[in-house]
Figure 1 (cartoon, rainbow over the protein chains, first blue to last red):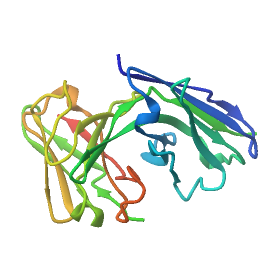
Figure 2 (figure 1 turned 90 degrees about the horizontal axis):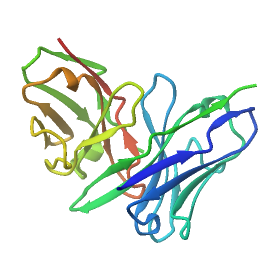
Figure 3 (figure 1 turned 180 degrees about the vertical axis):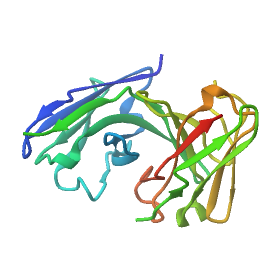
Length: 121
Length: 110
């Protein structure tokens, strides 16, 4: 079964760090584009970061320089290292596979269940 | 970066047809994808590309696009379709895959 399972969320103080994990099954993380998307309480979806199959990484301006996306190929796992956390980073963080169908069509076709990150003192 | 604009809320009578729209400059170059999200659940892809449905998505969901506007149409809305719907497209530069979401539309089925 194709599945993504996130872990690592929790309560952290402002300025602190947290590492989220996303374990994949049924497909290979390193062969796909993988993203993190977050959703603040009561708000909409916000794209956070992507790692290409070739290893290139991109970030939303709101997290650039503070968050790092990476993957561990043998563990088939995606990560998001979050440093210098702020109250506005409080959100449910989803990992998602990004499928490129070609012809300018693409989509997040598989989503994890999400993990909650709360930044508060 | 570009923006995608959605109406915050739309309602539809049970069994009727409703269209949810998404506007943005990037839609002139790239297709939108559409996601359904019910309370407390992860988003689910319902439409991608020109008008493609993933396996398991009912055929009452369809997509279309014209100019800078993408639309999600539900023909014969059911009670279980009540949810938040989000559109997504690439940033207009095309460099950041999956980079832009609309603000979401809350669909109420009356």
